[in-house]
Length: 312
Image 1 (cartoon, rainbow, N blue to C red):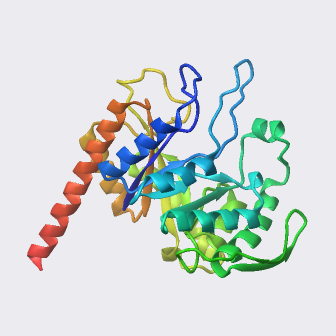
Image 2: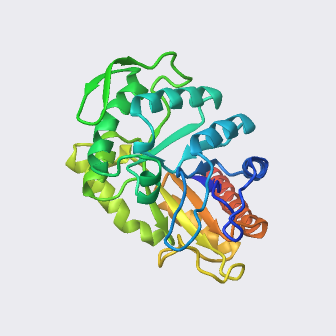
């Protein structure tokens, strides 16, 4: 099982100051050095809440491309791109180019979007998001997989469109869906290589999502074993930050490095392919504890392999 980190592009939660690219770059390189398998970026244009100043955030794809050049081993992913922000045919071109820059390390995460104020502010359509997403996938998927599409729909058109040159992977980067609700989960079962659910806590919180995606796969005639399942985990170190983070609910994860490593093992035993951590507070000490849990998890996996080898 692969383990990744969410990196923040959003302004500092206390001061609303921007995060300099250099600090984002350093964290990405540190995550790679610490043994994490992947780094992930959120795709938003701003956050705006009543009675509060606008919270800024760097544009995802620009930062993703920069980090592809700044790193060498870790996979890089979007968790997840908002479909309405980019034309799907152009997104396919962008993804192929970034997969080339990263030498085949991109995981292309996509979703239908949810944050209405940013749509309004940037003049983007917020209506019919599921229908727009369904049409977009009829362009994006064949462009990535085959390099060609000819499609005319209500919201999108791509006539005799080609994605050339091709990137390092013949079928393009793996496509991850971050989708909820029966209709969009069924689309994941039809089109996606990976399906992500969040925010999760202890491994037992995966029971419902696993059953849901397995049922959706069977409904569309797909073997559930061919669907990679991933999970975004909300991790809170409450002794380091008293205020409950916005992303934390009753399914979040807490604990010592040893307890976190045990949770990682639990996810692996369920067959989850990839987990990503969004942690709070977003500090060096919190990241140090999570890194220690990662090392404990890797150590237990190595011991397990040795034990199986000696028994053989």
